[in-house]
Length: 440
Image (cartoon, rainbow, N blue to C red; front, side, top):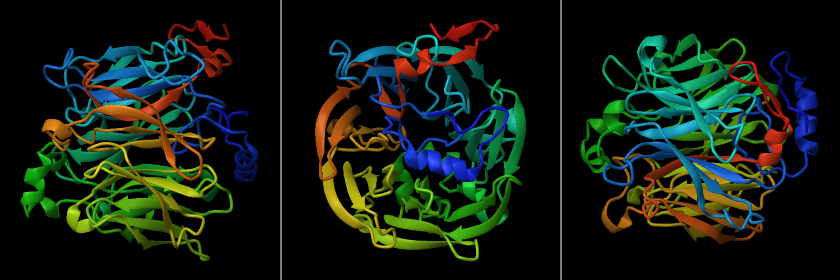
């Protein structure tokens, strides 16, 4: 399918919606930016941005490539390559740029950013750029979290600030070459940040809220036991006029709303998020007058147990919502055909802890990773660290393969993205020195 966005123009919203609805089965994770091309068919690789652990392997944060195509038996479910960045920086989230050539990845502790080139050899990504000026460039933003591709740009959400390491933060934009463009500080009534997701056909962006460096770099047990620390979590979702980059609504969503997932079908003008501390599923829905409303639509386990819903993935047809609860290591699958009344249809214990979840666009495979934050992960025998792949038949999850990141001496796996040989062979990129790569 043709790219929805080029560096020169954005197709009309109506055409984009038609293309999305008519698209063939895709391999790509459903939560990705609509401003970038997506791969079709079976994914060949899973790229896993991984936190280093002192005394485990080289102890460094790294990008790990895992074989994911069962047709390649020699590499299926196995480690193919890893690229260390040197040291431990609290590796967390990553995201492709709008041409899908470069994968940007950040560290929440010291705010460094690394850019990997995937196109020349998709099985062996190469580190091509390191940005260590994020805090200075942005005017004091700390903790680059979400990397969301825009045409010719990368939108990055921050979690904290240099002044007090609290929760006040901003959105930051760079161009694709790593040149700083602008900082957008969040308003006083919604100063905390976390995720950002854009719905182009509505000209709306939603941003959610978490907590600052002082909390996310502290042992979770200490945070929970500290009444003052527990006051410093976000409780809002902001609605933005995307083109103007202006917040136009502040929605109350108590309890640290984290990941945001827009509905993908063109007739659906809503998104889901989870309030991590309250264990609630929230619906963010556009009303007839164009404004948005936030509503609780489901409880996720018992909030007194602090299950900590940390991530979610929405199927391409907007029917199933996969919700991971970190503390009990469980994925809960909801039928959200009626988004106002989600129905729990399947529960699967993934491990002693589980964090990220990504479903493929064809709805046949779901991937999970285990690590949340270095100081929030479980310890002892419950400190499992894995990438696990499951099949999904619309009724239940069935194990496909698992990679033990501790046994492989890799560290703590966090976010994951997909790669495919065929996709990159069908692209032409201007290389770092103008040389054409791909199309080989």
